[in-house]
Image (tube, rainbow, N blue to C red):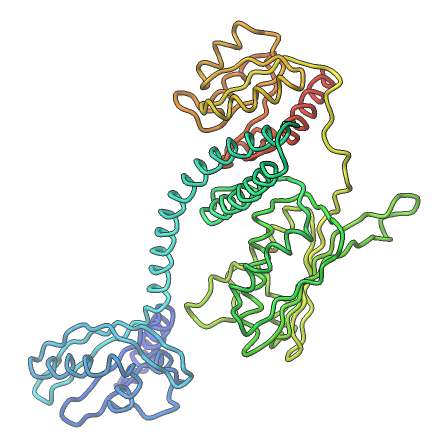
Length: 504
């Protein structure tokens, strides 16, 4: 709108102001309008057009056209508010949804003011697009709920893992007794199997609670995929078949089992969204040898995990950005845009790579390559013994660890918490290794570690926990994840003591 007057400079200044106003409206997604209630004529600003889903000036503004874009569930309420505003000359603010021609739903906040100066009543107003703000608020509320649930889940998993350590420990001790009969042995096997499933459940709880750091443990990727198939099937629904082409051999990698499983679920969710009706999600694992590792050296070995769907596929431009955080092809409000980004992060932290191949209409294939962990001969009885301090507030767990170390020939001293451990260390300078729980009353395992670290010549540490503590990442201290077996305990102890002695 351009004012006409005697001075050209005034016209230029007015034009500049209109341009600035239009740009300001565009930046904040605020449209403006003016409605002549007597003639029904209405004017929209350029940003008002865009909020309504039109190119500026592409249609003639009308009251009917505006109300026709209001969501059917909101229209009667907005019309009632507008009628009251005209009757009272005092328009009321109102929030509602717009259903645009492209099918997109936008949330808006509208306010107005009555203007009447020796003429018909006019109402001027603004429409502010608040869609992104509401989505952010909803995400913050979801995050708060997840954080609260995660706190409870993390606490449950901690106690759960302590109980599992006792159950599995005593089951293994009893199973090693040669005097038990076959029936009792079978029952113990069932107890151990059920406890193992509970152990996986506890890890799932910790993964949901995001109270776990990535562990470095030996994982049979083929067995992990086999376990994940029922979870993936439940996630994608009955119309999509999840097929596992079993590799027929153990293919171990060094990684975090719970995080790897979550990555599979994220990939399954991506496949589900890509398959519109019925389809197949196929998983396979194989050993890959890298012939380009270098002349004269053994080829590097990788475990390849292929996840293939026969969904709609992606264009090259989408495939290039698929791992970007917050990039999503889903409708507004669906998904977080972090699913594939988190998969990429996990794979890279595990020392691997991920590639994607996709064609529109032909589906998508993800290839994950993780470093192969060659077989080991298992734990053996240490060649030399040592003095070990076991710090654990749970009597049953402390007793299990003590008995396992006693049978292996170690000399064991016990403490119920960090303060008691400091007293034991003061009277036993020959202790080479401290095996400590993290969560304990009075003084935690982390606080004990920090207190001992201040000494010039202190023992080495091996931590054990049911809930990983991010503070441990700063210490580079080996950690046993509860529940652990006697073999895992003795192997970790031997490796720790051997390494400490080698550095002396």
